[in-house]
Amino acid sequence: MRAPMIGVVAVLAFLLAGCRADRPAGEAGEGGVAQPQGDAAPTPAPPARYGIGQVPPAAAVKALDIDVNPRGDNLPPGRGTAAEGARVFAAKCAACHGAKGEGLATFPKLIGRDPRDFSFAQDFRLVKTVGNYWPYATTIYDYVNRAMPLTAPGSLTPDEVYAVTAFLLAENEVIPRTAVMDAASLPKVRMPARDHFVPDDRTGGAVFR
Image 1 (cartoon, rainbow, N blue to C red):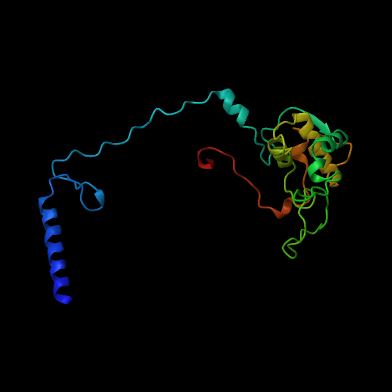
Image 2: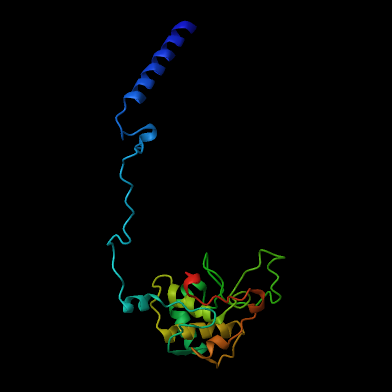
């Protein structure tokens, strides 16, 4: 069987060599890629723009640009108290998080200060809440405003979001129950866990994209 096999290999090698020798200039070579020729025109550069899409109007960008950072930038006009927030929470939040913010099923617990020593690294079973883990009061507003309630995110008014934020802060013993939360007072609230986080000193601009 060795001699016939050698003959087959020789014939294949001859045919392949002939294919390479007879290939017209510019025809696709190995892998289907055209082989460059000396007189071939260079590949044109891609256009700077493809004419797809459009520049969004400023109003559309503003409607989407609603995030609130740790400093409180972008907080809107409005105000709310813990008493007002208790009513909003009962109507629109308690179904998932419990009447007292204790958490239901897979929905997280929101209220509770223990552990007060931030000992999560020593016991991973400890439950993180707004009161014992959340670093910035302003980003409570941001999250509630953009993502809650789960069934209708973004449906709360600024006053309702300020009120829910005030309710959560008061229930977690961070602010007095009579405190009014608004764009001026909320950034001044210092969360109990604040010093356990690295300061976010990003300011935006080209390097922040």
